[in-house]
Amino acid sequence: MTVEPEADKKEKSGKGGGLRESLFLLVCGVGVALLLQAFVFQSFWIPSESMQNTLLVGDRVVVNKLHGDSERGDIVVFRGWNNEDTIKRVIAVGGDTVKCCDAKQRITVNGVPIEESSYLFSGDFPSGEPFEKVVPEGRLWVMGDHRTASADSRAHEERLGEGSIPESDVIGRAVAIYWPFSRAAVLSRPETFLKVR
Image 1 (cartoon, rainbow, N blue to C red):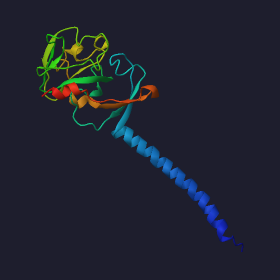
Image 2: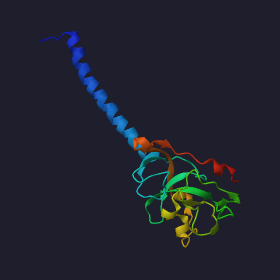
Image 3: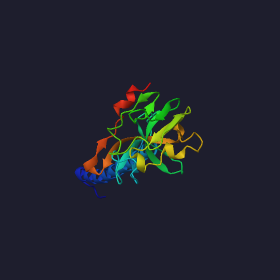
Image 4: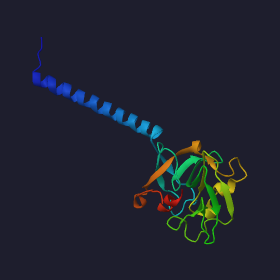
């Protein structure tokens, strides 16, 4: 009968155990990543100019799918009017009256003017056409930051909800640009929306 030294046994089992442990950790890591993408965070690519200069063509954003109710000023990804993933800024929520425009050419929400210079595309007006809508409960009025290049709520007023989208169609709130690295940034809600009641 052959006997192996105790040290050799430990070394062999250590090598095999280390490989199994590494594979187990790798499988667990992939599983956690897939669960996070399915239920918590998802990545989206920006294909159009409708959110310039906040988001540029080719930017990649992280979307929080557990964001709760959408609020005025949030940038949200939703199932759009043509059944495609779409990204826009929430301007008004259910029960709000959204109007364009006041004497200074500003959009108002519940009579409060929204100062949009921090995100509106340079040279754009808040809207080329006047409108006034009461947003139905459970729905959102959304607009792109590059208004002249955005087919948003204003372009779909003939549809159910008069251009607004169901809150239930929101996939999540965009929280950060992560690619390209030179544009990495956190996407926060503009302070101007805090004045609206």
